[in-house]
Length: 310
Image (cartoon, rainbow, N blue to C red):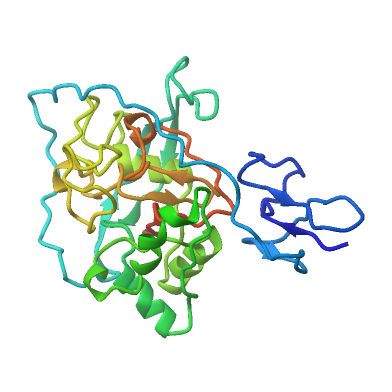
């Protein structure tokens, strides 16, 4: 029997989170299709007659965001951003997240709180990348033999994402976040750079500060401070944006784009922060994130952190 499958790379159970995202394709011939487990990514074992077809299904699921609320009058002091368009962002471009306690998670009753309950956690000091890792930075790793080229494997019709396949190759997009990577590829880059992926809790503290604010800039939703799914009506970007395009949405420590633009891999094998294709609920810093282990979407990126030596 020959089986083509999208397989889950988490070493937890044989249950797949989505019948659509983890489709087992039944080849012609005798025998039933079986789920397989692999260490990373998607694999094709053998070849069914007629070739492997794109997964069935419609466009990505969209939700209609609530109207943007007026931002509160008192603005939170933030780290000022320098111009970054068409400028190489070095691995030294990091900001400090100080040692101490922080409020993590969501209050009881809020969507997602059952997966990320409200609590206090203590953290050692660490540095976090000010921006999402860019195409230019990732290309240096590929050229040095430490990384492999991105490849998109996504959960919506192939014709919808053709532009995303070209972003990495386009020199004019060198200052855009690199996308189309697995967790493993993101982790390999961070290790190559002498850093590591943050845990979900570390990512949250870097994004929302110590006071448990809902978004990096505060508790009130403001659609002008992030790149989200509004088709460019308020954020001026229909899809992905160069890093540092929303300095007004920086976290209390100066990390930018931690809400929107691209979802970011963390060490816990989830994606945090929402993206240009997300509604405001997914852009909450405390949102538990999403487990898309197989897909390598055009709205999935990452950033790294580095422990502070004492």
